[in-house]
Image 1: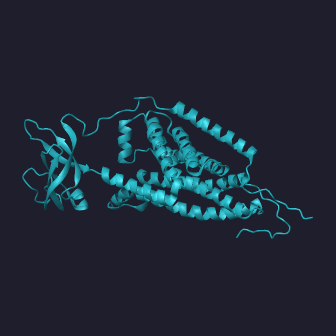
Image 2 (image 1 turned 180 degrees about the vertical axis):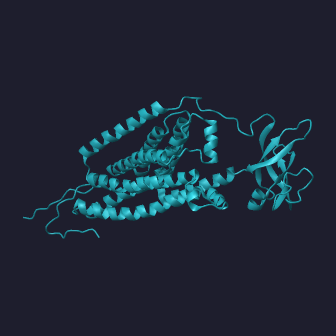
Image 3 (image 1 turned 60 degrees about the vertical axis):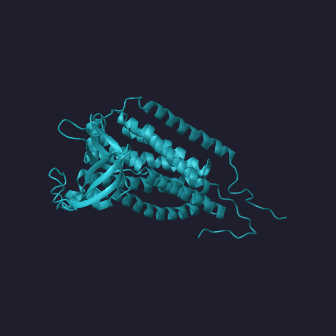
Length: 406
């Protein structure tokens, strides 16, 4: 009489483990809820600054371009042209406002030569009300982009729905919720004086809880990815605080940072820099943790009899390849975000060391290095959790050959 070994399926339900993990995840969720409640910004506590175009006699209006007449900026058009002396092609633009009135304004090469303004373009203008000395004046403010952005968003949703089906749509919903957490909790809490690094940890954990289970479903597999992501968040936060303080990053090395400090002087700008390191790495951290867990589960399904050590070794090989690619993703993403600044500083002759050690560049270097370190360490930690929580290996049927991982 033959005996069959290993009849349990690798994906068989494990009620006891599920109950334990449910308790742990609920405890994490409860801690996040308490943290958000404690750090939640008080209504009306965010300092409000008057915008440059909100003063008396100044307003923004919508207009449609009707006629564009090019002229040489060096010569200008009229004695009072603000463009006189600028090199490159300028343009005088006649536009129509929503009420049918005509508005005339000039554009310099940064707008006209770069985008080629033409009839039919929708723009926004700064309206300067008439005074005793001057009539109503208009100046170019920006293009209207509502329609373009809406079309791009709709196109992305269609592509995601067609390729990613319901899982892709759930991922988009998760992105929308994550943006909501940033807008409703993280940004306001930081601006109202709450500890930025604590706000970043609590907010990042909340985002991970939502997006992971929403996109990938409630399962042991997703929970393993969550544990790896939590390690990455905590490590990045601690390393960010240490390195930011050690490198004397004040957070005011850029124009935006200085303007923020001027508007909200009570905010700890150095801590803001540390917090941005945590938030900036969430997308890649989500990617690497889910990929590692999925690799372990798929290998276990293909080779139910393979020892855990063998699964771990194979998963680490996959993880190393993924980490190498993710490092490029982080580096080029950060380089692209500061491309304009890098191009500008290259126009000023200086030693490369002096360039790299300026706060604006150093801040991006530290953000890249710390984020990469957190990503690299999260990979083996996630793999460890996946191996620990994945179905155990099963004894092979002696009449069947033992499967091996390639």
